[in-house]
Structure formats: structure tokens, C-alpha cells
Image 1 (cartoon, rainbow, N blue to C red):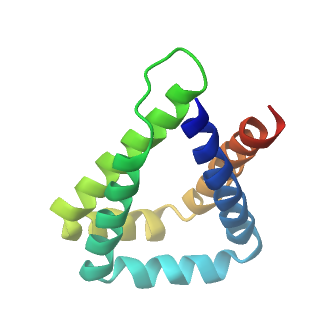
Image 2 (image 1 turned 90 degrees about the horizontal axis):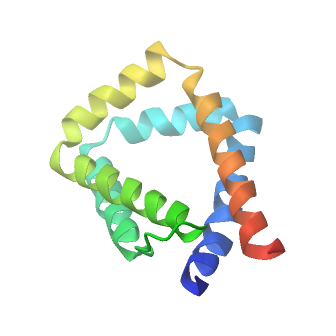
Length: 126
């Protein structure tokens, strides 16, 4: 449980700050996403880092808060592996989403904000 709280204290502020940035500077974040998605090397490196972070997150399958952290960790691990194994496919999917469904950036920001606030609450208010 202590490890899950520590992870919540680290991830909560990161998600909240990123979400606020996405809401306030959407044009800049879209440009960064497009630049990122046009680089196989960056996608692979991001996959490596994401998978590494995911593997380091607590793996506690208990019916309480740590299971949420575990699920996020597994999502990181799987997402990182996909980026490492298929960077070109990741590029295509990402660019298609960015160009054909631009509203997904706002949805992503809203999800990150809610998750970040929940993690902040659990990490600092509990």
C-alpha cells in the first residue's frame, strides 16, 4: 500500500499538469504530438521508457486502491511493448487519430485530469 501511495503522489501531479497544459495550449500539444508521431526513434524510445515505468509499478491485485495503480502499470507495460514492437503501426494509428479525430486530445486531457485528481486525493488527502 505504501508503494501505491508513493506512486500516486508522483503520478497525480504529472497528470494534472499535463492535462492543464493540454487544455491551455492545445495547438502546441498537437504540434508536439505530430512531431513525435513522425519519428520512429522517438516512438521506440518512448515505448522503452513507458514499458520500464510500467514494469516498475506495483503489482498488487487486492480489492482496494492499489489495484488501480496496478492496472495503470499494466497499461504502461502493454502500451510500451506495442510501441517497441510496432513503431510504424503506432505512428499510423497516432497520426490517424490526431488528424481524423482531433477531439480525442481534449478527451485525453479530461481523462488525465480526472485520474490525476483522483491520484492526488488518494496520495495526499487520505
